[in-house]
Image (cartoon, rainbow, N blue to C red; front, side):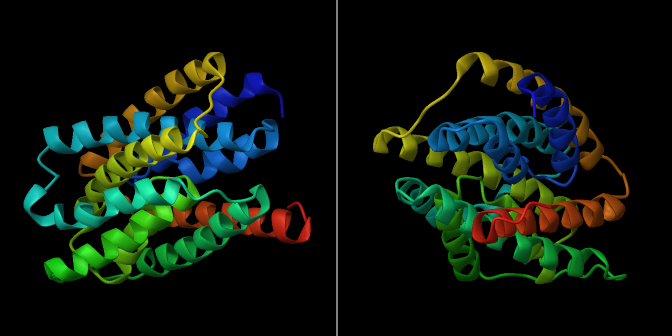
Length: 251
């Protein structure tokens, strides 16, 4: 895949993912792995792009009163330090993509289960439950090199915690803080690497796409169809990574 196509592809990824509160890190990783050879450059670039997209989303959610700090703060207490530690774990490229792919297959499956349900219900979580969920997914996000919202959101949707827009706003902030923690972890571990010229082009593309997607997400816009499509995309990306890096099958 020629590098000049990447900004156009990443624009649509950012638009698509940000519309349901994600940064797109999983797809950035998958696509970058096809065109870049440096494993740590791939992880560093994906985290930078994640931060750009979800920063916009977080701002839009705050501006429109969707974000509820009193409800979401416990999710971050353990997730931030564990994402930092997880980012310092050094894995081989094959093991990394197998872990990421397996997690995405599960995430896509659970997302699809939740979004095909006809009735949206809401239940309360204790702070302890929020701490455990946030910490475990924060660790996974650090190891996998993405912000973790793509794991947290389907779990919360499946467990029927709050409405989809509040979950999307939480996912956006969750990705932001854990991506920053992950970048710091990479820097401390000496594995932070970037192609600055390429990254600048991709940042412009994802900022434009993320702005449009976040606007759609924050308004009274039916996200169910987008949610189902995103679940299918997440499942496909995960399956592709597992088959490619586990069995050398390219689909």
